Image (cartoon, rainbow, N blue to C red; front, side):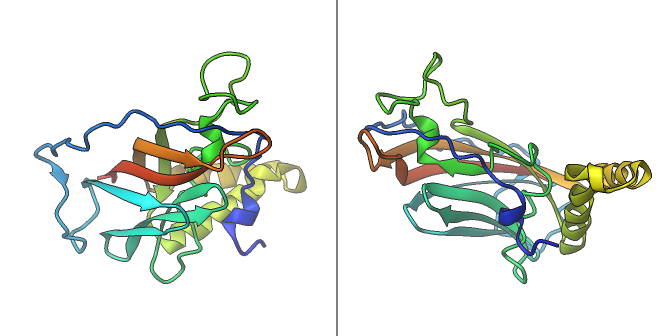
Length: 220
């Protein structure tokens, strides 16, 4: 069994090049509704909660915020940006999003990298047209399981679902049922401002600074 979901869920890196760009800045001024919680009461039960917060992060830095008892939202630095992660304090390498956010192969919303915002020949922003790199943009939607126990169940189920040819039909069907029944939260990370660097023909853009807002919704 693989010890890390990063090895398990590969992202296909497209070969792109870069040049300077800034996305439009937007105000992070979106007040919570009556049932939304921005307060730092991380010991309150998760059921039915909506958690909203914003942040700013620089290249190579790690962002972490406790969102519930023994539950943390993280941005984990990778080569060209960050990976969105939710996980426990005990095993931060277990990404509860990676086992609950499809597709489980290829480009996924949880991976934020600079090249995704540039076109394929590095001559401008990633806009509609023949040079579009077909990657997620400023709004990233994701799901997450809510405990270490459910992470392991989801991980084991996905082993069978992704390599179904090595298991019986009954085993695959049972894995699908287990995965579907797991309690999951949902979230959206919205990029409000972004500065790219490492720009120029023959290079891949990475991210200098990202300003973002996160909304998390937990099931009742």
